Image (cartoon, rainbow, N blue to C red; front, side):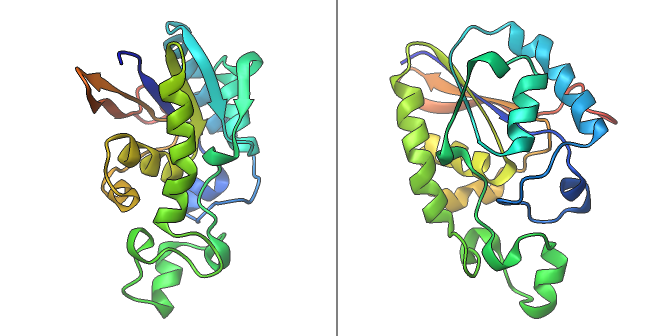
Length: 194
């Protein structure tokens, strides 16, 4: 295999700025997020993607559109963000007031998903990407893309906890001979303040 899997995290939202867990709540980008998403267009336009996959949530679709990928987008539920269940819309600090030792990557969330649940979802996306006839790009969310990268590398889903990912970042996964590798991670060039 020689093709690459590009990952694009959606750009800034009000909740990402506030560091709230944003799973299935369908919120738009901020104006700064829209501006940043537009800066991704020239970078992504240099690539010839055989497949453009995107989370169905608005913030990912809006990022894909502003980054110039819109007309080719195929929506995939496997790229939905973590289902944060009872922790939707609150911060880690707020959660830790009641559960001081809580860690998403170990504990998952009440009434939501565990890392392995998310891993099972992204494994289907990875299979589709590996079967494609060329480079693939996925536009989605921070935690689901971290799990996707972990699974691409053959690691457990919880390994994604070690892969910080900023809003609007671009990453590239691929191959070195027959070994799945990470070529580029958390590139935020063009981001406001970067």
